[in-house]
Length: 233
Image (tube, rainbow, N blue to C red):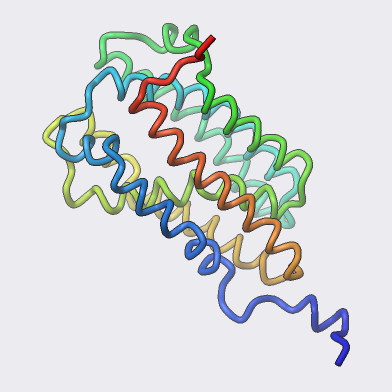
C-alpha cells in the first residue's frame, strides 16, 4: 500500500530526544569513563591538561556563540529567537568570566589563552558545527549544537554528587550541575522534540547523524585536552 505524504510527515511516536540520546549512549558512557572526567572527580587530573581544556574551550565557545546566533536567526518563534540570542551572549560571557577565573587560578590570563593556537580537534569541531548550522535546516543546526548543552548538563549532574577534592575542579563541576543550567538544557531538548515532531523521518535521520557526530566531537574534545593535543607539523 502506498504511503501518503501526510502519513509520511507524521512525527515519531516517542519524543525525538529519546531517539537522539539512545543513539549516543555508548559515547556518553565513554565520556564518563574517560580519564579526563574521572580525573576531575578524584582530583588526579593534571592541571596542565585542565589548562589545555580551558584554553581550547575559550576558542570553542567563540564559534559556539556564533552557531547559537545562527540558530536564533532560524528559530520558528520569537521566544526561541530571544532564548538562543541570550544563550549566545551567555556563551561569550562564560568565556570571558569563568575561563578568565580558571586561567588566573592556573597562573595565566585570558589574554594569554587568546594568543595560544586553536588545536586540531577544536578546529575540526567548530568547523563542522558552523558548516552544519549555516548550511542545514533549523533542525540540523539544533541537533548539532545540542550535545554541547545536553552532555555537559548530564556530566555535571552525574559528577555533582561526587564533586572533587580539587577546588578548581569542584568549581567546574558545580557550574554545569547548577539547576539554572539544567533548566536551559531542558528548554533546548523540548524545542528539539517540538521541531522533530513536525519533521519527516528523513529530516530526523539527517539531524540524528549530526547529533551523533558532534557528540563524538565532545568525547574527542576531552580526549584532546587529556593528551594536550597540538598540531603535528
